[in-house]
Image (cartoon, rainbow, N blue to C red; front, side, top):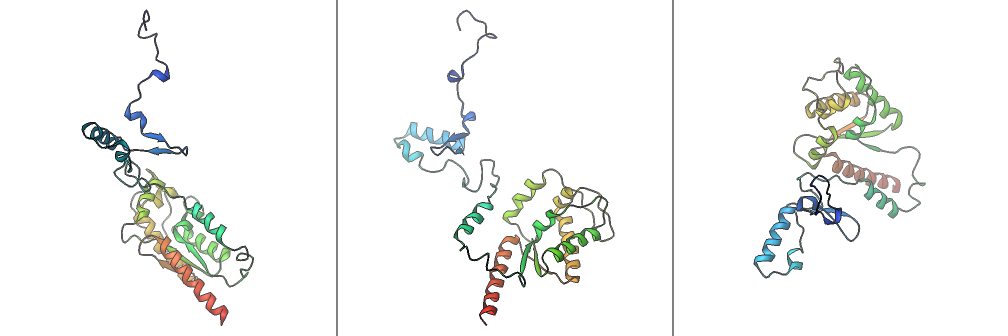
Amino acid sequence: MIGKSVAEYKFSQKNQVKTLASAIYVKAPTGERIEMDLGHLYQRLLLMGFGEIPLPDLLRYEMCCLPASLFDTNMRMRTGDKAEPIHYILKLAPLCVVPSLPATGLQYVIDGGELLHKFAWPKHITYAEICEIYVQRVKVSYGQALVIFDGCHRPSTKDEAHPRRTGSEVGACLSVSGEMRLIMTKKSFLGNRAKRQALIHLLAGEMNKEGIAVKHADGDADYTICKVTCSSSRKSQLLCHC
């Protein structure tokens, strides 16, 4: 630094001071980056300085105010990897299960929330025509099917996923009827919970008219889908044995 101006001299990276704010993520021995709570780290270092508590005992537990497996330091619920359990279950399933499935007489259980996102909506289409798209697709692709929709009667873990999916695109609250036309994007429409639920009730009525069974879950539909699928599987096995 001697003989140089402040504008000319630059510290090398190895000589730069690393603050706690720059160490939010630490690298684990496995190579994974772990997010830690800096406030808890500072408190533990203070305890180590004032007392005689060994450092391994202070750092034995997670340095976060919430379970790190479920929440990050911003108190936002982490997204789950649904595909990972499916891959594990498929490895445990015998190879003879899929080839032995019958070609006809199958009972399909469909996630209604996923179904809403599956097909594109043409511009300026009526809500009745939107329902007709889903009804025809279900009849042609699945035949005998049971569609299960999410309920909005009580809070659930799905509440954290809805803002993440829609972001800031949330449409205004409008009444939904069959003759009305779509005047916004599909993402904005589905981002409004009241309009989404109104469309679900309209779609459920049209499906019932066409002989498609519909069930509304009390909260998140995932548990109801698994429960109904297991129940249908047991009934099918009893019929086969008889």
